[in-house]
Amino acid sequence: MKRFVVLFIILAFVKAVQSQTGYIPREGDLLFQVAGDTEFSDAIANATAVSDSVKFVHVAMVVLDSEVPHVIEAVDGKGVISTPLEDFLSSSHKMNGKPGVVAMRVNMDFPVSDAVSRAKSHLGEDYDWSFMPDNGKMYCSELIYESYRNADGTPIFTARPMNFRDSSGNIPDFWVNLFNKMNQPVPEGVLGTNPHDMSKDPVLLEVYRFFMP
Image 1 (cartoon, rainbow, N blue to C red):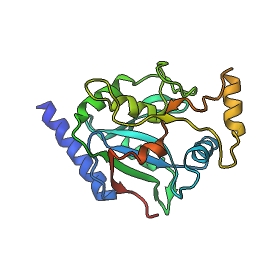
Image 2: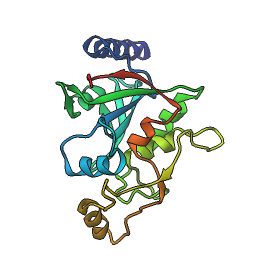
Image 3: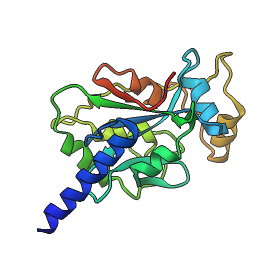
Image 4: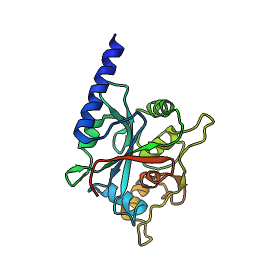
């Protein structure tokens, strides 16, 4: 009986989100956030989306197995956490008064529940400020990359050499200072991911845009 009550509550909240925004959340959807007004966002956007008018700097995964829709995300200063979908949208950078968020969905046959389970397994891990693979920490697109793996372990997304340089070819002070504090070199060219490149991956289909461009 309790299971049906929870399911009813979830459906009610899904319908509430739909009525307020027009978006029908589905388990495993990826929500891409547009750059806000922070030094971190600027550093990411300037390195990964130089020529695009809409610059994505964060990505999270929709989860629908609790009383309200949530997203699982890797957040600087917090690590891998579960956030109510409503809070995620309300805290997003606003564009024309609307959340600067685009919802995308994997457009291939994939067991989404497996991706959700993998994402949950990372809850509580620290944020990966070093942006390196296989270190027990996660940055936002790394969490999605690791969660969406096939049964044989191969990822459905493509890792590419990371870029930390701006349009002039220089590495901004933000990155230089960050990696100096960690006594690590800037991982320029190391294989990795970023939200903007991930949003353009052919395995994804845009299903909803919360704002007008």
